[in-house]
Amino acid sequence: MYHTRTRNNQNTKVNYSQPARGRNNRNNNQPARKASTLDHSLLVKEASPLANQVDFRSDRLISELPISPKIRQALANKGYERPTEIQDRTLETLIEGRDLLGIAQTGTGKTGAFLVPIIEHLLHNRVSPFALVVVPTRELALQVEEEFKSMSKGLGLYSACFIGGTNVNRDVQTLRRNSHVVIATPGRLLDLADRRAIDLGKFRTLVLDEFDRMLDMGFIKDVNRILDAMKQRSHTMLFSATHDKSQQSMINSILRDPVTVKVSTGDRPVDTIDQDVIRVKPGEDKFLVLKEMLSRTEFDRVLLFEETKHKVSRLCLKLNNAGIAAEQIHGNKSQNARQSALNAFKQGRVKVLVATDVASRGLDISDVSHVINYQVPQTHDSYIHRIGRTGRAGKAGKAFTFVN
Image (tube, rainbow, N blue to C red; front, side, top):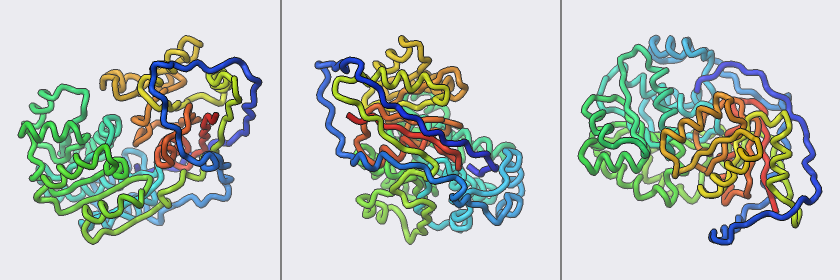
């Protein structure tokens, strides 16, 4: 999002060496987890000294951007002073209607980068429907819609959000009202299309947010169906924090004569995150090590990742039984339960949010002090997105990964 100036936190080194305290329990009924091939050296990196980092500062104020005064006022009302780098470098390109490949680290305002040009186009030509924003997770979809509503407040523009885990019949009724922008996850969007409740052929603009995840094997067929159905598509934007080179041929087939803007390399975490591993010795109880870490005062808002839904539930229960306030979020939870857990974490009512990779994409949570990987992530991209939940918008953050 467009940003205001923030004060950076200070890093503090902590030593987590502990004596062996028993054996880890293992549920023998669970299938063996595929061993991660991620190079452990990639999990250790000291944050660059904040004083040596170049903090991007646009030469332009919000009031000087080539957009409608109404949008400038809406952004000013949200407290934004200047565009972030990804916003500054893409604004004119997207207003011109050029296809775009945008790579920027998490917390740098990618959502605002595509929403502002969309709103600008709609103020000049109120086509309904106009833009389709497709995202990989329910939480990200809700956040994108919330951002659209705040940026377009009072402008007479309408949006709709369609995600799994909600009443599909209610979605069908919602579609009877005109919406300028639709935000959706792929499964629910195609479900509505199959019911003939939504005509994808009417949309002019497509945004694939977190496109690297959207183009992986889990979504590739859905994305192709969406692309094939968008007969009037004339403008396409792809945004993500990472850029998987193996997806380049697919990217080339989606975009036409695109402009590429890379604020980050797309293959490494932000420099403001202090990264380290917690080595678990043979016979040592990993949970006791985790519990000791979480007892420290600096661990005040912790995002804790596990690899499967079952393991998330089990770890969350163990934390609560140990007196550590925790909530959980994963694909088996209802949308209401997921949103409730997320709100409790954002509002500080619980200290720890235990999650699968569903929480690694697009969650906008302020001041996450630590990200902890209870297992080594399966891929480097997964690792980058996970730890990107901390160290956002130039603030310092810490990430730890348990390694056997």
